[in-house]
Image (cartoon, rainbow, N blue to C red; front, top):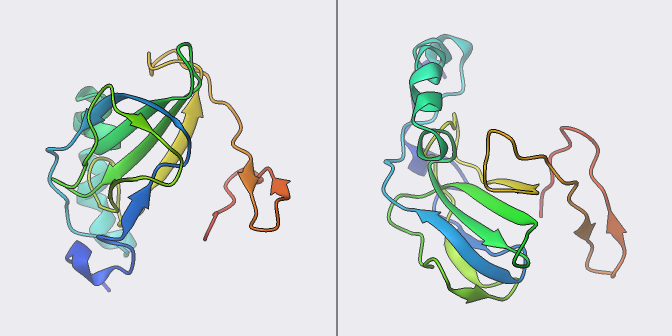
Length: 154
């Protein structure tokens, strides 16, 4: 495909996204438009040229529509990013249980195709925050730590 594609053409777009952890919502953003998906290298060029502008906008420009959940008063903090515009259905101060719906998969922020970005950090001061490894639990109760750049499906 050499043209941009509407996000609705992608399998994950609009799929409900559940909170990966129990905690308190400390930040949300819900007003970034979803943009077309870009699969080809050629159509990515104009998108890449806009990278600096998105970065200057901070969390909204990079994470797009997102939810940040504090697992305790001092963290860690779980960011769930690139949600669909207008679908974030939690507010700052809400207490969440793991598995509660927080929004829908979108293509907002610094995203070339609809997907959800999840990261854990020690702070919400994003410039200085340090990442914390994420351990996933399998249905059989065992757990694993994904390798760098491993795509987690499920």
